[in-house]
Image (tube, rainbow, N blue to C red; front, side, top):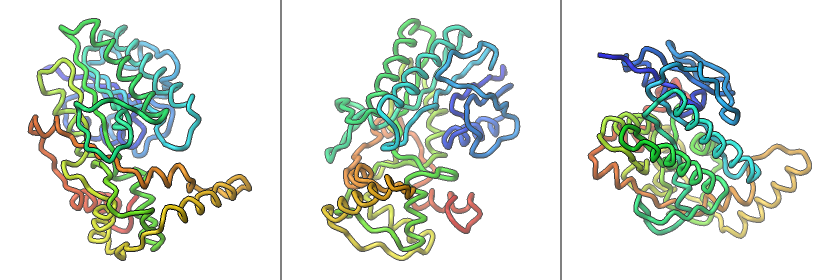
Length: 326
């Protein structure tokens, strides 16, 4: 059997590192190349790490004869960047990724978009829902989807494109929303902003990575799917799962949004005075709004999740050494 060669743009990041680990453990690849400007979250044996800025034209020789390209590179933290920064990396990166695939003749591309292309909503949304991004990040990801689709449509008879739209993804080395939540709960400093029933679509990183391979195995030219747990977990469900797994105290306090927004304003003022803080009004609003997204396409195709919410937190804690979520 002919072995494959994989090139992962954004391979040093959270999802990219888990993807590289999965590819290396499969034994199916002659070469695996991580192309990124950052240091990897964790190193994987057998992976070639190369310093590549996807915002710049890409040299042909970084992965000769690449048979699979994964484009995970993105500016994604919201809020946290100026609007132009999302487009500069996410749109220009998609352009350079597709240009590279054209030049080297790679016909299989996996692109991670985002559920942000739908916009925040209390209403349930699946892959058939209207695309109404309400942030620069979501708009940049939608533009990037179109750039990848243009690459596909140039040769639909031979090329294949997998587009995953992940919700909030968590797991070992995430260092984002779920990590901050775990640390706040451990210190008994978390409370619900405005309500406890906010639906927060989320998914575990190892299942997300498995969905890439699942998609590539299917005989579909252009596959687009949402990725999240099948269950629509609320903020309270997520906190309760952390409590069960890590023996944190149960979170019960709900603080009215008016007070939360005043507190956010105060932290913004302190930030301007030099206090480093991640608390601000846009982030508080984001916690309050639902992301009611379901992975209907994966359900219809019969994708098998390995972990539910509680099992995935147990797995994450185990990978972190059992003391705290890392």
